[in-house]
Image 1 (tube, rainbow, N blue to C red):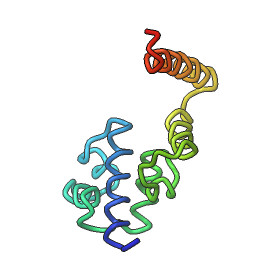
Image 2 (image 1 turned 90 degrees about the horizontal axis):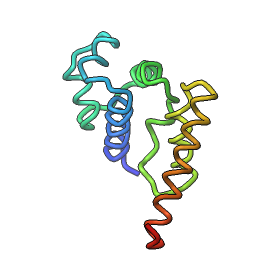
Image 3 (image 1 turned 90 degrees about the vertical axis):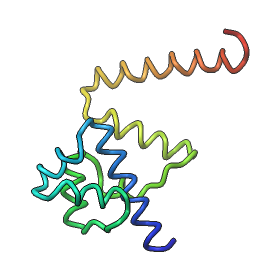
Image 4 (image 1 turned 135 degrees about the vertical axis):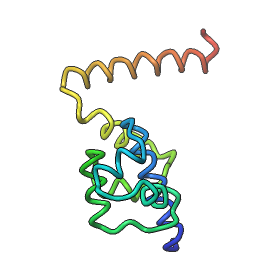
Length: 117
């Protein structure tokens, strides 16, 4: 993998994580003490964030540094890790509710796929 490709993957991950928690580029830039344009350039892959910046972003997004290096995938294990990361800030009881909701949705989708809807 070339450096430019990795920078784009990291940038896309930053944008995804930011949107996932409902922050604007301006919100993130303010928390980091940098310009909004810098966040925009990181997300577009125009510039490569330093490890210090990635660490700041991981703290803001409440995720792991390695999350910025993951590519979108069809791999079930990676998808499970993503879901676990999303629900990890919730209390245990709320996480259980999310699991019940996911099980219900999967049941509906399976019936739809099987033509039993």
